[in-house]
Image (cartoon, rainbow, N blue to C red; front, side, top):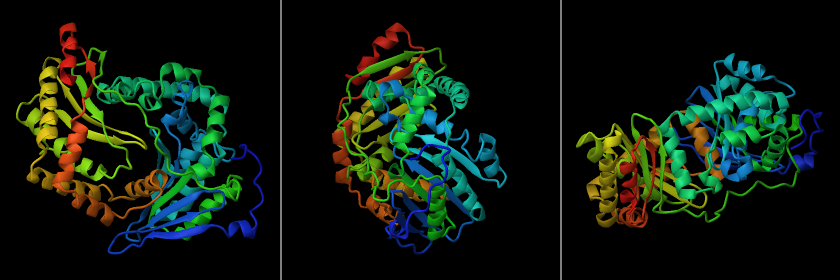
Amino acid sequence: MTSHGSKATARPSSEARAVARTQTLIKGTGGIGTVRKTTLPGGLRIVTETLPSVRSATFGIWAHVGSRDETPALNGATHYLEHLLFKGTSRRSALDISSALDAVGGEMNAFTAKEYTCYYARVLDTDLPLAIDVVCDMLTGSLILEEDVDVERGAILEEIAMTEDDPGDCVHDLFAHTMFGDNALGRPVLGTVDTVNALTADRIRRFYKKHYDPTHLVVACAGNIDHNKVVRQVRAAFEKAGALGKPDAQPIAPRDGRRTIRTSGKVELLARKTEQAHVVLGMPGLARTDDRRWAMGVLNTALGGGMSSRLFQEVREKRGLAYSVYSYTSGFADCGLFGVYAGCRPSQVHDVLRICRDELDHVAQNGLSDDEIARAIGQLRGSTVLGLEDTGALMNRIGKSELCWGEQMSVDDMLAKIAAVTPDEVRSVARDILGQRPSLSVIGPLKDKQASRLHDAVA
């Protein structure tokens, strides 16, 4: 990416422009959108899903960078940069950026994860050109001024404090550290007070230049749109900023595995004066590319994915030991996590942990019943479709799919994958995952005697 504030470069030659490649990845029928992809010279990928039946559009840009790409000293830089891209470009001030979308009733935001970052805007279909121009300008022309870095530092420190004030949220960061230690996956996305205070404008600019090259970006757009128009508008915005890159550059491949080391049997307690004890009991899960992820999704749904799930029934419905109890999976390029969360009174923490561990052990040894598996498959199929009922969710699906897998899967194919899961496959993945020795993270006001017994849950 060229330096910010430079003059627009000349338009590429017709020969360079001719190498743009467009494919139809999913042909829409019966209310399913058509998904198309164009790769521009320079490696920028543009993926769209066209749905003529809606009146909105969501435009997003995904960057192939997350907190796991940071060194210990740069912990929090990806999230810091996410904030700074809203602070102004050579064409727009921070107020100009926000007021442009507010003036048309649009929504604009961003999020940073362990392996990617996304910036997006949701608008009426007629206002899509504005959204494209604003978001592309932010991504290609951020100034990252020293004074903006200093001002935003305070906002980020407040965000860290807000997270630490919510133990139900903070315990998941603690669990990542319990499982991964001082590996990049074990460090918080927001960074720490010390690392955020140490980050300088110069270091963030270098991080920006390295990771926001067009080969690292995926543009995703869904709604009542025309693919070719979106491609032209995005191309014009990147050309205007001189940010299309070298014509022969190729897109970066999906992130591959690093064989991240995970622990087992470890216990971490963060003593705090909270009303509840917040616990996560879990073990290594599956990478997001693992073929068993469909069976793992069914297993997770049956164990802790709804009101009829085993954990909800045993912990809350039958015994009233917790208000919130659920299980979840997190898949990364090379590894994953499976966890069970519960919030309960400190005096009940050992009972909750015992019941959760008993259920995990029972399912590992005996599996789930055919009825439980059938119910979980139906629930997962329904929630998958209902979760894709707006253009924002569709943009997320196609953008993340291109960035993380390098391919697209239709909703019908996803539903078929879920429906094809067999009881034997669920029982096999239950043995493999739940049969491992778990680790435990706890935040709460546990006394010494209570704390000393926590290791019983992972023995």
